[in-house]
Each structure stands twice: as C-alpha cells, then as structure tokens.
Image (cartoon, rainbow, N blue to C red; front, side, top):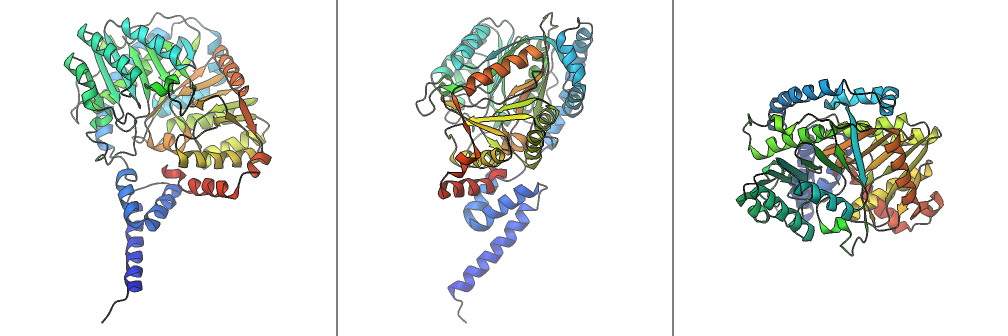
Length: 486
C-alpha cells in the first residue's frame, strides 16, 4: 500500500491542529489570546510551537505568591506606622481632590493595597539629560541604600556611568541593589555588573533569569522603573537607563518621555514594590526573613502638596490593577482625558471606555509616536488609532523624535505617570508600576506639557487614515490579529 504526499500532509495538518487546540486550552486565558495563539500554531506548525514554548505559557504563580504574602505582612506593619504619621498632617487642597474622587482611591486600596500617600513633593522630568543629572546627584548623596529596578540597563555610556557610580557608593559602604530585565537589557550580561558585586553591591536579572535564549518565561518582563535613595527619594516613570533615552541614537532622535522625582511618603510605595521584587529575585525561592528593615522606611517630615498612590500590576495577579485604574480615570472624566502612549493596543474593555467617553462629549486625545520601534506593534497601534479616530477620539502623531511617555491626565484633577503602556502587554504580561496623582497643580502642569507636545504633533483625521494604502491597512489589520500576544 502506498501513501501519497497529500495524505501525509493532511495527517500532519490534522495532528498539528489537535495539538494546537490541546496546547492553547490547557491554561485559562481570554478569548482574544486563544484565537491569536491558534492562528500562530495552526499556520506556523513548528515555528509556532517553539514560539509558544517561550511566549505562550503562563507564569507559575505559587512561588511568587508565597514570597509576596510573607513579605507583604512585614510591609503592612511598616506602612501602618507611616499611615499613623500621615493621618495627622495638615489639610491641603489636594485633599479636596481626593474627597471628590474617593472611589478611585478606594479601588486602588482594594485591588493593590495602595495606601494614600499625602503631602509629597513631586518634580516632572521630560528630558533625559535633566533627569539623569538629578539622579546622579541623588545617588552621589546616598548615605544608606540605593535600590534600582529597570527594564533596560544598557552597557553604553550612561549605563557605564551609572554602574561606576554605584560601584563607588558600594565601596563607601552604601547598600546597593540592582534588578534589571535580561530581555530589556539585551547585551548587558552579569559580567557587566561584576565590578559592583566585587565592591559589595548586588545586581540580579529579574527572577534570576540565567539565559535569555533558554528562558521559558521570556514573555513576562519586568517593565518597572524604580529608583529609591535612602528610602527618602524616589523616581518612577517611562525612562530607562540607556543612551537612546538621552537622545543619543540617530534612529530615534530626541527622546520624549515623562518621569517624576518624589520626596515624601509616596516613596514608600516604590520601596515596598522594590523589596517584593528583590525578595522574589535574589532569594531563589527562599523566604528572606530580613527583607523589610526600618531603615528602608524612615519617617518623613516632608510638607508637600501632592497626594498619590503607587500602584503595581503584573501576571502574578489576575486583577490588572493599572488597567483598571486607566479605565476608572477614563470613565470619571467629564471635561477631558488626554493620554500619551507609544503603544496603543487596548483590549475591548479599554476601547469601550474610550468610546463611551468620546461619545459623551469628553475631549479624548491620544498621542502616539510618528515612527515605529517595533514594526508589528506599530502597525497594530495604527489600526486602533484609525478605529478610535473614526469614533471621535483625537489622535496625534508626535513629530519631534520618539514619544515614549506613558501618561494620562483628566479634568485638571488627576494624572497618572508610570511604566504601563495602553496595550495588552502592559495590562497582562509585564510587571508594571504607575503613580496615580491627585492634585490640581500637578494635573495642570501635565496638561501644559501635553499642549506643548501638541504644538509639535499632527492631528490624524479619519480622512487622513482613509487615504492610507491598501497594503498598509492590510499590515495593520494582520498585526491587530496578533495584538493579544505582541
């Protein structure tokens, strides 16, 4: 009996389809991700399964939850001490903003135990040179501890400058701890941090990944950006550590991002998040009984005007806390909701929130880059930009370099600055951190920055999107099909 090639081919197709279905349905995931992975596995039989091995499997949560639960109990004790101090602080205008938006504050306290940090001093940075000049000054002045966590810590000019400064501080007896993402810091090996380790400091890739090429958790990235100095000064936002973030790469030109420097009780949220991530990363599964020390949470005497909550999210939780925060702000807006994000790949819940706001007369604006850094991601971003423009959302292409800021501001009252983009990856796959800020002056400052950015941006009308070529629209539509796994 002879078996022809077509029979073999049909059998392979059927077997591949069966394995694709069994593979995708082994773990709980949303419908969009199921169809996206089925598309990849069915039409790319071998390559698809290799991709799934690295990108499709969900993160084992048991180890992370075990570590977090233990350390969270200690953190709650430290933060309770701070709450008792903050409760007696003088009333400020920002407290009225909190009162008017109390349900948003309560939501973050419920979903992420994010306590309300009052009376902070916050400075906004939109230029990498200004930011790192101040960061270097603060690191140089450190007396007790320096905690750094970044998605990208490149082995380049600014990366070496920061690393060498950390080595110097470690030699002075300052506790230096660094977490970096092995994928985001591609090209930066453990050898790069050896001088720091030799000086008494410590640097680990997030979750102690040994090899990017053999990391089956490669789809779950530590996208957070955190600096805490002596438990008193904190930084977070969109900048990473690398020359391109200072506008030194011709490919991107001037780099437009947003970062904030915090002095006050808001730093405790950054410190707590770093400690949780450090404990999960450095102990290799062993609970660190000394994870939380009083020196990391000094009592603050700052008398600022800004109230805030530090909110984190990631694949170790199904709540998608930052996404819920974005939706909450969008639906609370009555006058305007202005957003900046380099990647615009929202899920249906965020799309509906944006649609409802725009159709209710809210001035909804979204600013995205005018150039790609990831081809598939950018085409998917263009697809959703075109769709939202047709539904009344104002889409702006930033025209002075690369737009990387992840911000939202509503009604001159509330703003968000952080690491989370408006996309699937930030909502479900990445470990992210955002500050949600309640203060009229801060929100007004964010609005003015946005207006300045609009002056170098171009409004994309539905008519302009309709003039795009059929080939470009096809690439956008195809990329959109893969959006749940980009």
